[in-house]
Length: 345
Image (cartoon, rainbow, N blue to C red; front, side, top):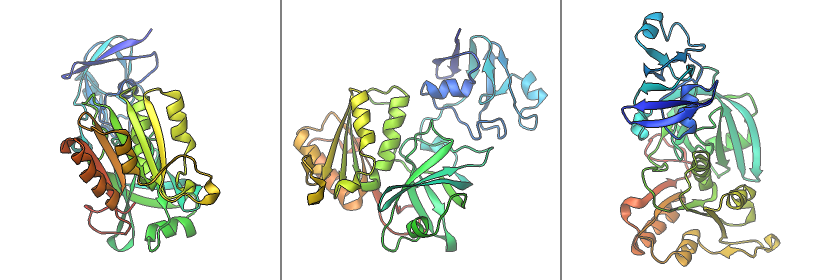
């Protein structure tokens, strides 16, 4: 029999099946409680049990003392309800509520998605997890103080491995390392999460998602997060690329649209090759949106891609009624950098 968890002071409630931790139950229900390692080693998820019975689980004594337990505290990543319970903790409402971390990671897998796109699957140390919002990015730390920023393509709930989509670009120091030198089990360091580009869940407006090239990465994170958390707002996903190989995970959004009636997928090629035998939409991806939506006043738009695409989309969408505050964007600049206000993805 599942137990009910009530979160104070928000009043949010969720249910936990037998043997499920408080943190897992809350995250599965779409409530973002703070956490770090998810295995009882860091204490980031420590909170108070206001009512009900729990089993503390494998919480480290260095993090949760007997005095803490006597005071009603628990590590939500380890504790499991034994009855209906009430807990007291803050919930993550935005990027400002998530601490910035500098972490090592191991290259678990290199996966070639296209001739010029590589998926990097990164594994964190056993006692670490990165809490982030769907759409955010991390900065890989390079030599001489340089950084290279990449959007997280994996969804927040799927945090055992972090996924990045790296495009090979001329002069891209990190990208060339990925394609020419890097091997599995290499060690990297990164800082994150960063960025104000993430899904705003406090709205009920239908969503238009636009990805240009590897700008699909954070869009993938947002869509998978929405599916996992049963956010069924209408979503129209437009993915633009030059040719067919640029749609390097084409079958994935096709499957989303097939399995979830509230998701629509529109691929758009600007310069399809004759060998592509392309019968779909052609032209600039943001223009395809305008062909389908003449009045954008009731929508939220999330766009990620090259700066020129973002600028054109913002100009043209607001001219078609989109409120400026409902346009959320992440622009790529293809260069290594030292200032965190820029991004090279």
